[in-house]
Length: 398
Image (cartoon, rainbow, N blue to C red; front, side, top):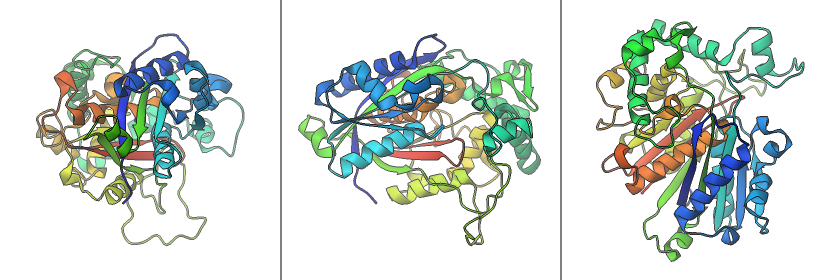
């Protein structure tokens, strides 16, 4: 177990398709986080930017890019790229500086201006790049992968199209209450079923969009928060960024094969990559899934949200759809999932989304989530998974 760091400020730029620079979005979110914390930018010791590969050269040096936009003031700076886990790894980098005594206040910012349609690899021929290969060799776009995973759940666990649609219905209802969400309209099961097939069996409303958006956090030492007048701040207790273990019995995007070049002992109970991410977070925090008040998970598709229920230990393997049907993951249920509306309501703004998840936990644990407030929220977990063995889970407590 490690010491906690405080989340003193949280801020976001609304998600959508705004046609502006990711720098503008990130600057809005950063200023909102600073205002929420009551801390001035010149008093921040360090800034960590979550990179966007689509922002050109400034995107790859996001920390300095945001620092310049806010005004050069001499803060330490770093930038992080880890696909969908970029935001959480930026949180991890900030936390490490605070726990090491290098800084007391660190601003974390992630923002993106995403392309229309699904994400694809960068241009050029790269036959040693598994992301490039799965497009060129297998024709496996992201929606194709989501569809294959949904088919697997249908075959192995008996999930149905109605189960998938109910995830969208739940998350759309939550997103309708979130002022930062891109999609703020409730939907019905029939509307999900009537939407166009994208990657059988998934419909358009089963798959998240790509979006512009930004999120930011001001992390501080707990001592700083208390000196600043916040006696009981929201605290980050764990950040898991582990890589997969051999053997992976279910192939994850964009991997085409699984092996162990290091000759690792496969053990007797292989687990999914997502389950290993969650397990590491629980172990670091010293808690179990039974202590959670809520979860924010990376619902790239409706079927993948059901998988997260099982990988987070919210239910046994194969019982994700039953947990949903019983109402346990809805507001008022035993363990609400994606009270923010999730990616179903936001879409993907890749460097920002893992930070946005922590923003939602922060507001919920403070009791500041408005119409979507989960009563009595005390412990929350986030979870996401991206390319190349990148994934993350953050546990926050109050």
